[in-house]
Image 1 (cartoon, rainbow, N blue to C red):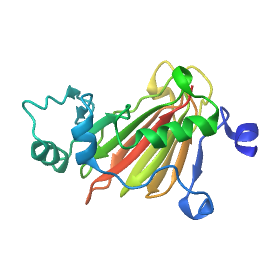
Image 2: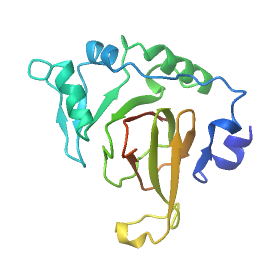
Image 3: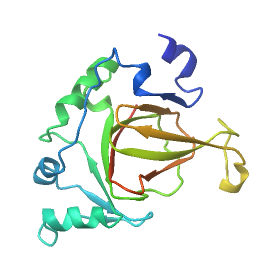
Length: 193
């Protein structure tokens, strides 16, 4: 497969939805209320801050108001969530089932929201844009090198994802995403083992 031979672990890759339409996406759309009902591990973020959602103090309406005010909810996909079947299908397709499977998180963000400041992941990530659009800034130089200070990165790539687009980010590549300034946005990340 060309992806694993030429891209995986080597470089960032962007796949606009109009270039992979023949493939059926593993998931589409988003139902926040279902994830709110089935998940106890929702993290609330605004510009890098982090709080866990406490359902005894935060109703579903409070959560949607928080998001509309520029916040983000980061929701891990766990057994019992309606998206868990999609996660298992992805694991099966990648041949990494069971305890060695993928991790999956859904990021539902309000207007101009930044859930995580510039960071890198210790594993490769596939991003599926589910709703709206997000502007990504991605490290475009010093790739594959240990970067001790983010100011050592002098070249950044901007990519705007819209619903249906896919982005692959190798481990160790710095990146951040900002939600659409007018509307909310939702994407899922698939952390590869």
